[in-house]
Image (cartoon, rainbow, N blue to C red; front, side):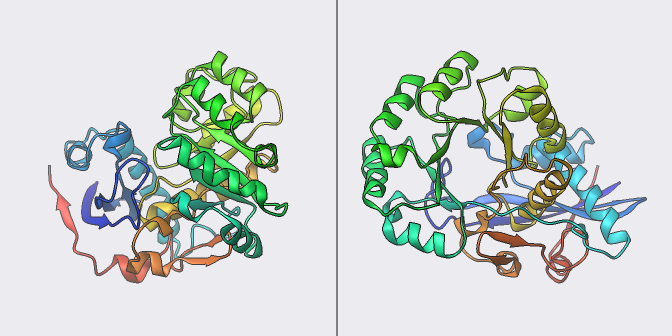
Length: 334
């Protein structure tokens, strides 16, 4: 196996949920094996517990890939398989629609929701928990809006405790609470507390440590209603299949990107499309349109989008053929 890397930096348009406005560092990989050449994205979030980029690359150089690096290698194999056949990895697949990711609560209101509904969006994801008073005020304004079909997904990133999350939801007007599709990571995962929140506030979605929670059987009936999986860090197929078959109730999964490079978005989109085909009705509106969180680049401008629908990038494998070839690639030598 030979591995080449091409470092990149993504500039957030507004402060990211954990990383502020600092440029996000990652690297595209070019991996050559006997099966062919494939590409992948490696985009760690040290703020969320990932080893930093340099450590990820060193693990590849040493032949002992860390978890995130191992997932990138797995995606390079999928890309190589399609490229070797000269076809798109998305042939015969349909990517599920996505929610709109709102990174600034200041835009929440009639104009935003009306525009999203007009474009065909069925859900909007809002990052909350950093400034509860301001966020409750912004969300409460939606109670004055005409009834809308756009559902609200509130992502707390486990910033509150269980009582804080319960109080947050209770502070919202009833007309707003009724539009909440789910609350995501309201607090640190604890089955009993989450089951109580699900019963008293809104359906609860597990994102952080979702794969590990499934693998170790920590998800119990009634504690988690929605599983949010990120194929950049977890084997989404195994996690989702286990969740929807082992947990009782009308549960479903949401596949999202890792707020990573557009190439990483396409691997998440492939995972979502594959799962939607294999598990009809168990994959909800996904979160694949994260490129809008960053300043435009050649790769993001090559993405094709129709309202809430991300389209496959043109090219073989996961696409971007004309953009990948001219990059400056540096070989990782043992």
